[in-house]
Length: 267
Image (cartoon, rainbow, N blue to C red; front, side, top):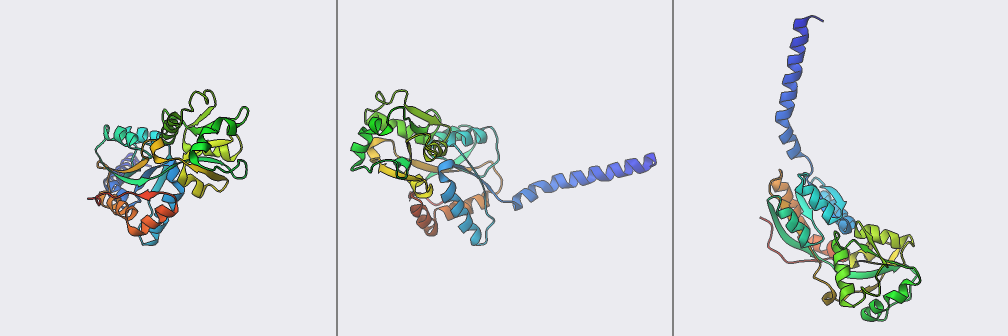
């Protein structure tokens, strides 16, 4: 190959790369939006995304993990259009790092869960919670999300404090990196009981809710939906957010154990 031919080909290749780089933003705009969501939303949000796609829209790309993990990733610059957190604290954390529009989307309840058939039924939530040390048995530990990082764990710790159980359970808590990890330990028999969400009992077939904790036992469980204002495809993000607040979505949220909270429509 002559030197002149080599440089002509190299020049064409560089021009092609330049053209592709100029097209890249447009190509990204044609792609699916990305939604970061708390692990406890997996089944319900996957169902909502499928229903949205069935209406002729492009299905969003869903990424699930603990709210703390996702908030930190987004704060560090991870690309996503929407963030569904399991509490408002991690949404505020993200809002301190990036421009954000956030409103409450869902409510939930805290529940005491066990592997099906392994625990006697509860007569009432209060008596069930107060008998936790006995129900755990010798050497048994209570699985929950790590209260330092996981919203469900923080709600759980608040409930244990409300019932005055923390001293009796000292050394008997089994913290996990997410509520779903904690409940997986319960499902496998590695922990006799776990604290999770009422919605978890609807979608995890190995588990049952022994008791739904009273709302006054812990702070309100609110899932805010945040839209990253510095992300591309704002129109697509708004469209999916509007769908998640629609009457059709409401029925699916309620069937999954969530409450759709009233809030202003996205704009």
